[in-house]
Length: 244
Ligand SMILES: *Cc1c(COP(=O)(O)O)cnc(C)c1O
Image (cartoon, rainbow, N blue to C red):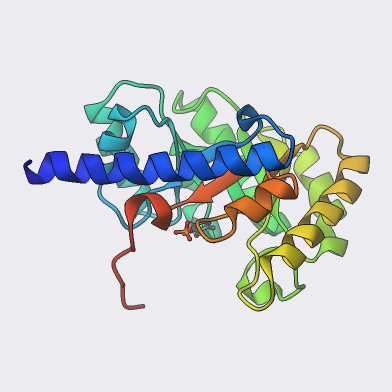
């Protein structure tokens, strides 16, 4: 087998394993696998890998850094016409809002009113330019341990931010995103995520998405109601180390 084929085989194997884990986790939780989207996180990996994953049937991808992401999306779209979608899952600075609004289906990492305003302006402009047709979906990132220095807002601050998003014409509030802190059991954090979400749904019943779970904790996340797992390493392998 050549390098091309062996990389495709490696990705197919990773995908198969993750799909199996999802099936088992859904079945244990009494949920249908259709309820949980698998977002394949391709950050740090080349456009060629995204193309291979499209050829293997995947359509939903997560990226975390500009301008790497925008360039990769453009390259993939030039090579494949399948309707693949790309979400922005990483921390986002306001000065990147414009480019992200050009390619993202959804931003998972919304954590301030100022970023919401920048994304709204950018999504409206992208719509006027014919670059996008739908509103930009957003998830509010909630900080499960209240340490917002690593992104996200404290649970108590969710409501004002949600109100702000609701008043932004070019944005559509879809739900919440969280990352389990490294300290402590994933079980504890996903339980916390489910509690915060239940509370949030009372005032925002349409915001049903819960983006939670990565390579290490997707099974626990599914048990606690995740509707979208973001999985990189378990499918693509270890990311190359990049110095800061
Ligand atoms: C990189 C990243 C992931 C994927 O993590 P893995 O452990 O490689 O599956 C998920 N979510 C976010 C926000 C990320 O930045």
